Amino acid sequence: MLNPITWLETLGTIGAVTKCRVAGRDATLVDGYARIGELFSATRAGQGTVWWVGNGGSCAICSHLAQDALNKLSVRSQVLSDPSLMTCMANDFGYAEVYSRPLRRLVRPGDCLVAISSSGNSQNIVNCADFALEVGLGLITLSAFGEDNKLWSHMSDVALFLPMRLYGLVEVGHEALLHAAIECQFLAEKE
Image 1 (cartoon, rainbow, N blue to C red):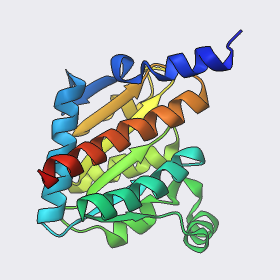
Image 2: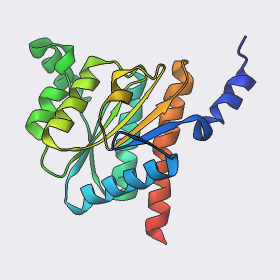
Image 3: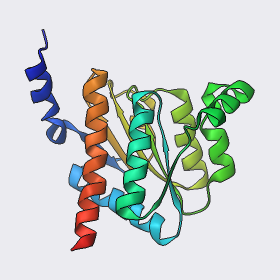
Image 4: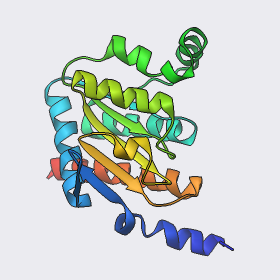
């Protein structure tokens, strides 16, 4: 039985157990972070936008980290989780299109997408990753549970995978991974 102390100890292993791919090839987490930094910097330099998509807890992570990226990295950063927008898209086009439909109208060349799905199989998130690949957006994906998930297998600039199955560990882990990317880039740029 998992107890709170074991849960916290497991959380402490995030950096050691996270798997990373850069451009579809296995890579170190250090290489993944370097590429994320490049994507955020290039997006800012090109006056592009970092778009964030996720469901449930992942949506909350997107909302939080989008404002951190804007505040700390001075990069345009947006979530698509406005309730009126989401319910309109879901009602008119189905939940699988709740994010990709607005992205098709809003993205510009030089933009970047951060797509988060604990299972890696949420069709609405996979649709966004497909669209990003189709139009050449920078793409960062975060997933967990099984290595056979669609998002981990998807071609992307950077893919991060947590080999964990508890939503809480995965969600806090994904948020920690992204916080590390943003805060460390912020600190490096201040020096």
